[in-house]
Length: 337
Image 1 (cartoon, rainbow, N blue to C red):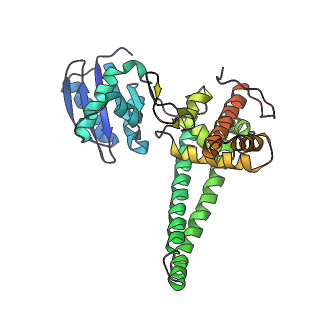
Image 2: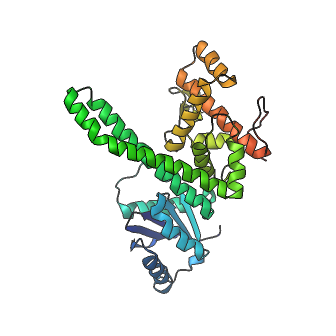
Image 3: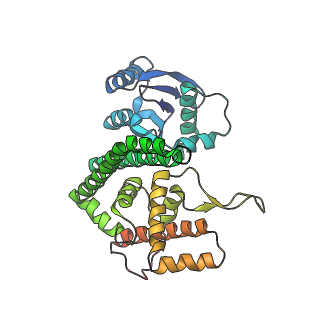
């Protein structure tokens, strides 16, 4: 990317702050309404008032879910360079910073784009069917979280309330719990139907779900996260992103603390893979044998379960790479060709 200007955008629900800079100074900064009409007017203003050649600008923003979609799509349709980075990547790369507000954050994002231009990957939208799948996944995840809150609150309250009070609380929440459970089932059916309606998604899902313990919901999350296995070619890198690969904390020759997984992981996906691993070790087979053997050797149970999750991910990437259903004793490598 040959460019001289860097635009940092800090996205919120209704507005976004922006900061345009070159290699030495800030050119302009301000705030824009987060709407298509306002964004188009803003781009026109950049050209007419500040004489900016938009094709020479890298537009960089943090990943904020749906809030950034209007800006990202508007820039993309104009064939402009737009890059979307994880908030933690930007925060860690710039070190300790003083102060925080939207304009300061926009300036930091612009600085990040300037410093690490070679690391940036140009964004392009997922296929429409995959974006619909992502919306369904997100909806299901929110429903599951709401159900967990209701169930855990009711269960916890039972420890402290009398029988009559507890029954009153349980009765008052049961209709909501039933409705959420029904909506989760509907979401599951919608996810499965959408995947089966698309040739490539169905092909990939048949391969992914051939790995024992990987169900359709987890498969859908993997398809979205990997962008149909286009954004991730290595199982190890995907495992790191999913919070499954442990890291050592080292300095020189010393190791500080135990190895541990990243806390900057995709937590919803990690939870789904955890449930898959629990399913795998509960059924007779090599993964159950592996778990029992390692625990019998004194290994930490959670560490062994994490190893099982890793094995599942490597199997998923192997079958997708080779285009064949999973078979017992399947030989796999780490990198997809």
